[in-house]
Image (cartoon, rainbow, N blue to C red):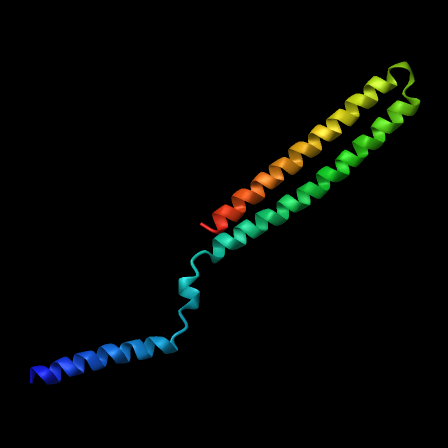
Length: 110
């Protein structure tokens, strides 16, 4: 009798594994889908803000050029200020973007 119960227990246990083979547990096991979606969304926003920052820096460089050429006696100083602000802004924007991408990649792989 014990052999029958043991064999039935093992058979039921093995049939459970056979049954689990037919169930797609992929959706339950992918717990980081929301995290990946959030990280990818933030990367897209970061990329968009980089493009906006690049456009603003281009406007600042154009203003700096205008100040250099037609700014009068203090134009070169004003042009240097605009150019320096554009370069500092680009360094900050792209530096912060790279740090954000590094953090996002490491969080996504965590």
